[in-house]
Length: 461
Ligand code: PLP
Image (tube, rainbow, N blue to C red; front, top):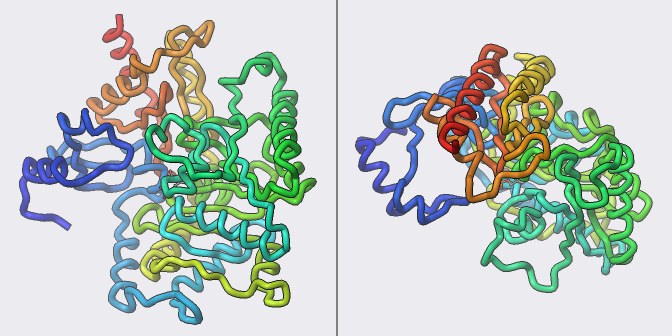
């Protein structure tokens, strides 16, 4: 949609009325927003006409790239055919049914049932409600505790935000009273807790697994319902677990009859080279997968909780007291969103985008390491097209920059001036480009970041 408002008028209306998520209202009141008005392929353009290479895929979501005409045609066709009818009870729509079957085909193991939501946070809430329902039906009414991890990001609804482990982002916001939400350590090779600094990777995995098991014992195994984890923590700064971690945590879940919820909002739909990463990349079969973002490449909001037959068999059985689920969203299985998701998947399959990610992803991870000669390079980490570059005040000791320096934001500003959008998270520069990125664009990103870091170091000198 284009309106007749000038760039100045748009900026003013936004500043006066649009409450933006995760925004510092003080700086916002002074600076307002950059209004993005066009997007095509790997690029976005703002109302000043300046174009940028989008190295964050909107927000980890525009996996097939911006501005695909056939996505627009599919969406328009679905709107004209049947834009909405409710999905409650026994009514459905064609794209919703076909997509559910397709997701069951793509998801690992017996994850064959799909509950649609409006995004990632609502999918997390849905999963937790389902887990509690599952345990109530099994007569395990005390099995309510959820174990999450520090630095995890699981969303912004009340429950999802409480499960989130980035505690700094919850200042002056309430916790759920009498909470059944717990946090254990992040699986984070770079910032290990005291006592774990010198452990080998395998020993660190064991250290984290022991902490998990001890927490279960402390809470009582009959009280713990589920463990929730992102395969690689995204918004926490692209934190990669040590080898074998997810399998070790899964084995403990199985030992204590605890469900494993894999939050694949970021890692699904190709970012790690497969439709879902839990099984194929990390060798672990979760009980529930949460997905959103890349499922529709952000063209239309959509999320889903995909659950196992094992859970379904219990919650759908009237003999055990299940059989009806009194929860749902007006827009569960929205036909336009599901049609967009189906087209998105078709494009990924037709263009062999997953194979492309398997080639260009390792290239990105390798090329970013060429920046290691820079004095403030701490570490680069990630997998395929999910990358974190952490900057440190002293690269021999890995001493962090004080947060007041805002090191990543400074680099972000220099990148933006040079026509590149990256994402600053703490002291880390995060990259999650559209999956169609070329090797030449990877080179462009790496050289622009090098220049931006050099300029930042000059600013601080
Ligand atoms: N889970 C993870 C891992 C995420 O990264 C996000 C969003 O970034 C969410 C859940 C929440 O998704 P949404 O913002 O669509 O509600």
